[in-house]
Length: 204
Ligand code: URA
Image 1 (cartoon, rainbow, N blue to C red):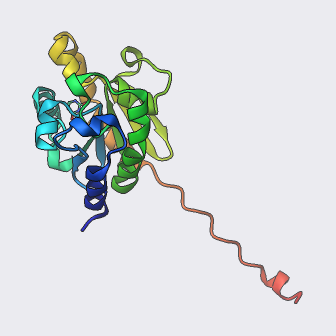
Image 2 (image 1 turned 90 degrees about the vertical axis):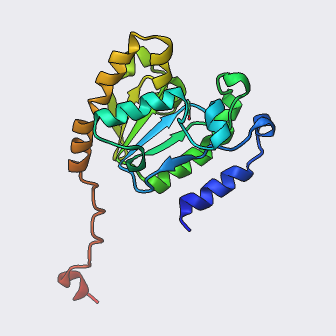
């Protein structure tokens, strides 16, 4: 069994937040365990809570379209959320819920080890682009510790504000060149430990 499957089992047992009491299912995430691109949304909605799978409602349909626009399918990427339980009434996640759930997401990132992390919406953006606003940062990237972080509006934003649909679609088209760039970034090998020189050895 994979480490991610084990992690999902641990997530399913988590009852740290009040909202755990109201959930139908936890929604840990899904996709390729060695995905090059990881998408991180906000929180499960009603459909996700029912099925235990991320982005399976209307926002998910748009995410599927966005993926198709760059010739990707869901099983080729990893899709997760900042929090793993549905906030009742689809309210925004609370700071305490984000902080309680943080270690699950951090471990998922560690295990999947993606080249690119795409943040979907404000809550996911806030983790990696602290202090930034989504209207300014969407469509831009930053690299940290060998991972490229790319900020996008949440796909649901296009369902509420039709004028954002085009912007989101254009931002998505920036991903393939970013991935090509990510593949050329070399991880710096650690310096080999210097052996004592023959001259030093001869001193002993
Ligand atoms: N919105 C999210 O942020 N995540 C989901 O899984 C579904 C809708």
